[in-house]
Image (cartoon, rainbow, N blue to C red):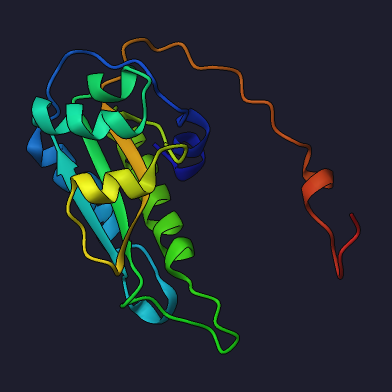
Length: 172
């Protein structure tokens, strides 16, 4: 499958088959995050993989919709602010670096026939407490991972290219 086909096929999956994801596929997805680019190649990420029902249930406390804990796998994507690059003006690139790595995960999962959903609307502080994370580690996103229950893709409403691109300067 070409990159364009993978990008077009990817969508937010919120219903998963009750089927375990093979460890080999989880590792393949994570390998794609591992090789993602980051500012100054600092790679300020850490991924916590949850497959145990008890742990998934605990993490589900931070995001109430039941479909999260129904996913066979939850990847907790964390950023390490003690390792991330900071620009001269203080801009911390941790979130940007994690965004790139997470995007690699979502696209690699799609390529393997798996589905994901980027969950950001959760209680990050409570999640950090449940996982007993150190101060410098921030939970950036939760990524449920599994085989999609159905193959019905929601329609993607996308802006036209002319609405998002300017040439030779901003023209909003």
